[in-house]
Length: 439
Image (cartoon, rainbow, N blue to C red; front, side, top):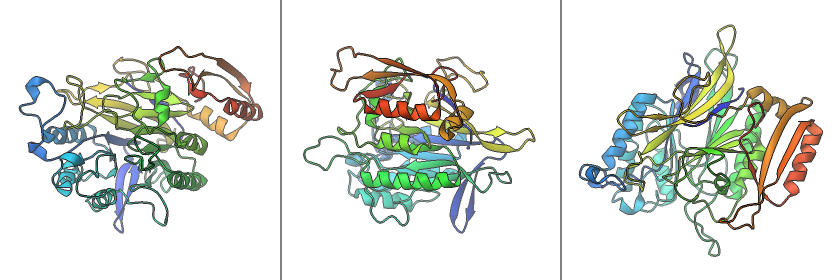
């Protein structure tokens, strides 16, 4: 069970021109489907044993179970793009990283479906450097992965790039990107001696993202999605009252906050972030208009939880059907998970029309209110409730909570309110919005 996001504005097909593959929405279905694969931890195939499975499964379980799971997901979902969000191979147990990558990505390559990848914190822990791993990925068949942005001389990490998805062929959006995908290298481990723990998205990467977002938004107001490995510190903002899914381990983000979430909010186009890294978390929560989502662990050589199925995340971006039968811009974005069980069980509440299995709650954000808010076209009747949690409070004690309600805010008063809220030195988390409230 997860969220349905309603937006205005994102075939699926991909085409080849001069060797360059172009992503496009599906003209027949009016949608673009993305399969996220997080934390395969692939090593040496059949020789590599599984981690954290039921006792009776150890005898036959190996990396091949991960391969079979990907093949089943590709067959079931028929995605338009497959995204691998890091720890694709598990370096410490990999004797030949190139052979491991060939095996790990083989189902995507053999499917002829375009795919993209970013690095995690374990991919480079064999005989190849981080740059070497990404260079090998970029050279593989059918991948849209890039070593780094063309023309950008100074940027941290490897695997920072963006992809544009055009509207349906023959439509008014046929030559326009109506969905923008951002991929970033969230690093592996801190290289600053005084800062322990994992890496983070650096200022040079954030600057590239900002400039890319600005340039894309000059062409169209398309929504964006971001994919990287290590979750942001803001993933810690949620509890069981304001996310959908499960949280079964701590948030293993960097020990410092690089401010990338603030950068995302400021850019305004990214509607959701998808990460991996924490294998037995699979929740989605909304914070100040951006959904922060885990995929859940996919690979069988990765740590997990015995009896808790490996899983993947699917994102479906659907277009608006116009009265004349043509496809417009993006109407809504939905995401759900599928389990590696007998039926590839779908964990998702219901379709946007309200049909489907009832397994929880669904959250929708209306497109037109978001556009009105961003364009500032007069008064906006809504109520937003914010919860403040003191940064200095112990995690084990109850936090003091203060609720602020803002009603019928004009553009000017909304900006004033935002400025006032940002001056309050507290951590800001957004409650689940009311049914008609914009994010």
